[in-house]
Length: 75
Image 1: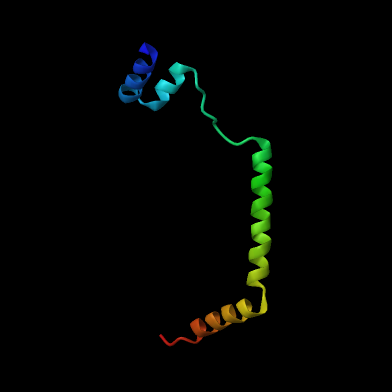
Image 2: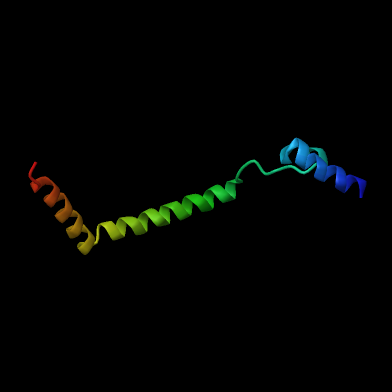
């Protein structure tokens, strides 16, 4: 019980990081290689879907219409 009270008091006074270091708990500093690989695969999949949407007929026509209206605007 003494250690639990001391740990809580240390969190309040010293901050959470100091308390975690004192108790021997190590925080994970970053992603491992497999997480990087999954992140890259997800990003590429999202890019492919976004590319397909933007190059579709309806979206492409709408984007061309927006650019055309912007260039034809009077100043």
